[in-house]
Every structure is written in structure tokens, then in C-alpha cells.
Image (cartoon, rainbow, N blue to C red; front, top):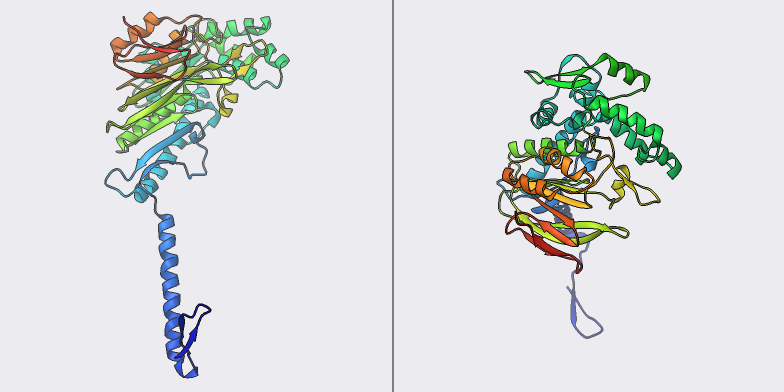
Length: 414
């Protein structure tokens, strides 16, 4: 062993391996390679492991689905399974659910393996078997005596407004600004509101019969109508309920599902606290007005009359004169309406679709009826809305914190 010193005088030890020490040299090389391999494998395993905690769950399937409309957050590893195993299983199942929801509730999907609303539209006056999820969603409309499902052709009119390239084109499609369009919409409203013209019958075995009169069929042919039934602005509500209910049935209860248009299903029953931001219409979009604290497995619907996000381009059209058009239309006259800028309703043991249908005659109106909102509390449905520089709510003890000095939180007594 040779001895050397560095520039500071410290002794250095240098081991010389001559040709006589080939065995030792190969042993050292083997050890170094083994250590490197172990380090590489350990790094790869670590990279493939999912850390426990709250994370977004995405879909991995290449099939068409409705996941683009939702955000699914889950507390991975909080149960018996590891976070890694739970994420793998949950990703597969969530992907399957979003694929089926797309086929069931969205006419855009076309006819698919899972017989959904498009299949039903293509078979009027026939008793056809549809997917169980669609059957149960249609049952909600029937039980609540709502004919909103028949507004399909009117939704198409407003979609033409929203997808217009310029104000002139949009005004031509807007029944509030074009007399010819208004007359056309009035005809559609008459058909949609007439049980003799169009109706749904729920039969046993998930069978449904969409009955359409000869006069309506002829009108549809002349005007190239594609659909008689459509969920319209309620389709994400139906999809949220379908996805959430199936997740709960499969034992996935440590997360929450939200849609881009304000439907929330909180699956978490552990008493975890959640914060909800409440916005009002501001000079350039949404203005944060309040912070709400809630917990428990609830369904929630957040309705607003104004766009806030990039995705809202598919749901709102803003004219130069300040008029904002949405597909939230009044079944009575076919007009786009909003009684207030922001309305939130929530309840336990409810679904988003049921909540939205109950809110429709209150929100899609010229003025807001607070008496009607307060009446819903008898059914366990509570609300929060913004009016007259106040953040008003009707659940006693609800935690609402104002985030705008010009607005104060007020508990409504009734």
C-alpha cells in the first residue's frame, strides 16, 4: 500500500491492484454493479408506488367517456388496501363508469353497446330495453312529474346560440331577439308540454316506451329534429349520480366527485371538513364572495348565471348588450332565464338530478322565490343564495364566512 498526502498534508491511502489481484478486482466490480442494480430497482419501485393521501383519479381507457366533465378526488390508502393497489383498482373502475355514463346520458355518444338515451330516441313508439342507469334516471323525472326531459329540440336551439361564431348569427338563433326563432320555439314548447304529443312509459325489466304522436313525428321530419328526449343541462347531474352511487356500492367512500358545471357528490362519511367557495357575478367573471364549511356524504348543486372557466364556453353565450344565454330554459315558454346570479342547494340522501329538478322552477325564473327555497327544507334540502348584498342561507348553524366586505352572511328565518 502506497502512502500519499493531499495539499493540506492529510495522508491518503491508495490501494494498488496489480495483475496478480484480478480476482479481487472482479469481486469489487461485481459488488459495485450489484449495489447500482439494487439502487436502480429501489428507485423504480419507489417511483411506481403511490403515496397515501388525497389525489386526483384519472381515467386510462382509450374509449369515449365523460371524464372530461368531472374531477374525482380520493383519499388513497385510507382503507385496508395500500394506496398503490387502491389507485390501480379505482382507476380501472372509474374509467368503466365514465364510459358507461357517456353511453347512457349523452346523445352525442350515438348508439352504443350500453343502450342509452340516443338508442331510445332512435326507437320511438317501441318498447325497448335500456341500461339500468338510464332507466333509474328516467324514473326520477317520472316520480317528480317533470317534463324537462322532453325539451330536447329546444336545447338544440340554444346550443346553436352558444356555438355561434358572431353576434349576428347568435341573435338570429336567440328566440329573445328573433321573432321567427321565437315562433319556432313556441311550437316546440307546445309539443314538449303535451303528454299526447310525447311521453315516456317505464315498463318492467328496464324497458321504456317513448311514445311520439304522428303530428310530432311529421314536424320532426320536416324540421330535421334529431332527438325527442335529452337531459340537456341535467346530463352531468345524472352522470354524477350514476358514477357516485356505483362507487359507494363498490365500497369507495373516501372521496368526492365534482363536475365542471357545479354538481357535487361527496362520498366521504368520516366527518372530514370540506371548504366550498361561493362566487357571485363580478365585473370580469366570478367574484369570490363566501367560504362555506361542510361535511358528510351530501349531494350538491351549484347554479350560476355567468361563465367563469374556459370550459364554460360550451354552456354560456355573452352578448354585447349584457344578455347571457344558457341552456337552462323555462319549460313554460322556452326562454333562457336565471332568477339570481348564484344558487346552491344540497341535501343528504338525495341525488344531484333530484336536487336540480326541484330547483328548476325556482332558479329558471324571472325572480327568485325565497318561500319556495324555504319550503324545500321540509324535505331536507337547504340552500344558499346571493341577493341584495347578502349571502343568504336557510340551514340553522351552517358555517358561512363572508369573503367580500360589501356582502354579509345572513341566516334566513322562516
